[in-house]
Amino acid sequence: MDDIRENNTPDTSEQTMGLYGQQGQYGQTPGTQPETFPPAAAPKKKISKAAIIAVIVLVVIFAIALISLGPSYMQARKYGKAIVSGKNLDDAVEMAFPEKLIKDDEVYDLCQKAIQESSREIKAKGSTSFLGVKCGKSIKSNDCKKIEKYYNFLCTMSGVDKKVKIQKGYEYKIKFKAGGTKYYMECVLIKMKGEGWKVFPASLDDVDEFSSYLK
Image (cartoon, rainbow, N blue to C red; front, side, top):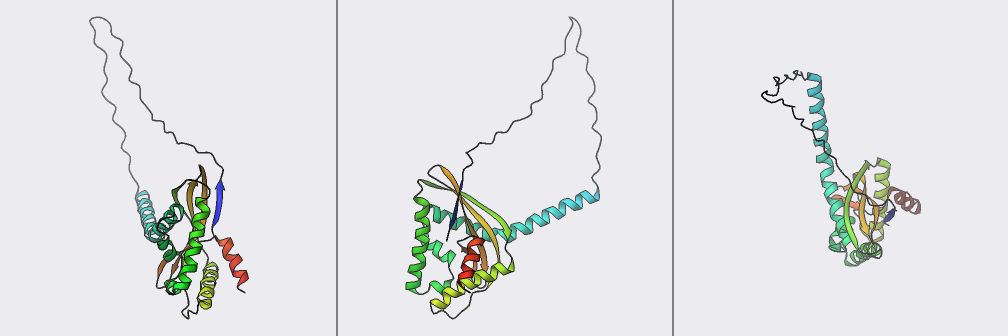
């Protein structure tokens, strides 16, 4: 279930203003030259070891975050582009459902119809354009178990014995424009053991709803 929210904030454009220095002119008297002064030497600033260490730590943290989020971020973008444009929806099916589940042709058709319906819902709002994705906080281990429960329920109903294991996940928002209005769609990028990053096409609120039905 896709959670599509409308963003009623009007479009704004960012403006940047540069700082321009003004160069004055020396007043001159006939037969004289403007008075000149030697340039003042700027005082030398010493960079402390603590500041250098702090910068290095920040760079390392940023690099670790980039390496960690990179695969999920690219997967979210690929999925978002497919859903918003209505193209490459077969790729979206493979990104949203476990490989072991969609090996069955009948199950694949059902999953494909669900993805197609999500795309049609977006395109029904008017001409669409993909704007990007935004990563949020990581999900809790309890949320991982709830998503596992949902996928394993689908596997059981489809006669698949192998269980799904979710290792971690992040909340994402897929941003797009439809009919001149900005929207966002919530989803969760999950790392599935043995299959890599998958898109759970719903919000964490929907996860709680699905979980309550499966008790």
